[in-house]
Image 1 (tube, helix red, strand yellow):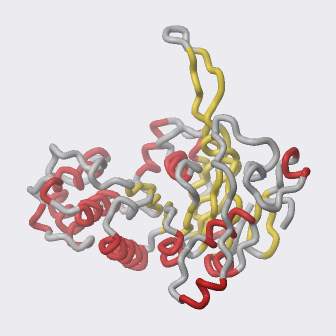
Image 2 (cartoon, helix red, strand yellow):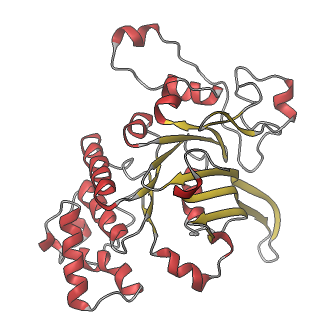
Length: 330
């Protein structure tokens, strides 16, 4: 499938990707009694040089999607193509070569940096693992990377605890850039930071994208920040993508009831418009991914659901050029 543009500038293609985590019982003879369907059959493309925003509630499978694409989790089923090569089936030794092209910026800058390593060692680690350069060359590369992300290059002998949250996230960005990747999964890179620092980190990511020609999968649940940074946006719920469209089209004309409910919760900085608009309050709680509802996953909370929604799985279909929806009623 292709969501947008021509086939030849697709950098990453995901086809029917699934990641199910087994639920086991028993202390010694562990038998599988079910599965948590964290990602349950999703498909999308990411074009060269674009940012695809992936949004949804906590626990909907966003981070698992990013990690499964990078093979930090092995997929249960489906395919992930990077420039036409299916990564899902590659043996470990061949996968290692593609690790240089794909990196991740983690959510928590406090947990993702080893407190016992200096900043220089943290950023140089990918270079050492892949055997790139000698000691002097690596040191120079690390200093260049720190300067690139707006940190003092002479901080290489300091430890993570000597930096603020925003500075630590910049160190994480420098580490992700060390191997000159094409594609970066930004796994909620700003959610652990102060609001005042969030915009700085997002602006840094945009500057680096322009300068280095990077492609991002930007995972977040802050819808206004996703609108700022993304070219297209995918909305996820309970392991499925509900809607995918160009940014402005999705925000101005959301078609899926879940997207409409999510966007109705975003504050508008205009008191008159804010007073006029209707909030859509969803009933009930998100079902468990270990036991998702039959038919459409969203039917238990959907204000428009009909009998068909309870039993028939919707098709993932393109309703206008580049605008995909997972819904019977659209």
